[in-house]
Image (cartoon, rainbow, N blue to C red; front, side, top):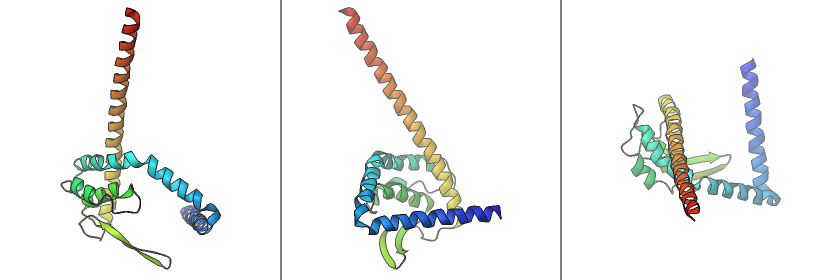
Length: 173
């Protein structure tokens, strides 16, 4: 019963969130709020979304059962096949790695939206695909984090060199 209570709470939260978004989208007074938040999200995720493609490609090589050969090609080809300027980069890479075709037509209430497909595989995802996708997600996070640590370390070394150079010139004067 405790688990059922948690599930009911999740359902209520999801219902509330969807209702709130629906209200905001239908209410002209709040339309700018949603647009601003979406554009801010697009701007803040612009670089990470593009870095996700090589990180996912690299991470996929560590995990048996993934198709790492086409990730960069499919990710690059399908990178603009989404309404969001950032979403398709990682979604297309995952589709290629898993041998799936993701996206496609979707139904939202009474509205049917014909989204483009991402990837060349099958649209029939199985439970094993979910296990592989979660594993790929965590490995990609690790690769991305290592890249960030490396980049921060390189910047810190460069900054250290600049400070030493500045101090040497100041001491000579």
